[in-house]
Image (tube, rainbow, N blue to C red):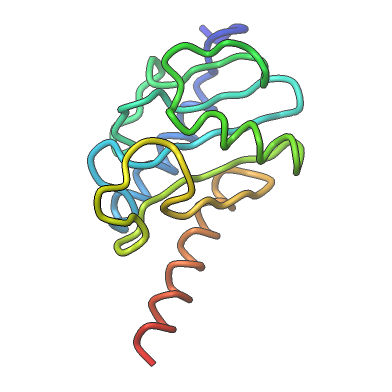
Length: 139
């Protein structure tokens, strides 16, 4: 049952669809990447170490943007920074091939971050940006 620290079934389905899309397009593998949404009051973000291909309700951490969120993605501070600058919306952090330098581990500016009004739109932006980058490297 949804509550202040649990996402509702629609939110879980939204995260699950986004994660599966990223995985199916090889934009994440294993436990790479993370997802979040912020409605101006509540942040929902994937747990650290979660496979985006198999998101379950327990894989989502819910709380206020500035609250202590144990277990949240190691990129939590990057998500907070982006929401602080841009306001409510959704963030996708993916790792398309060639976007993570060898040996890069932990939080930071690696992979691709996309911000949009909704999670599905952020996934679409990652897909578009990846296709643009691939097109540039083939010219």
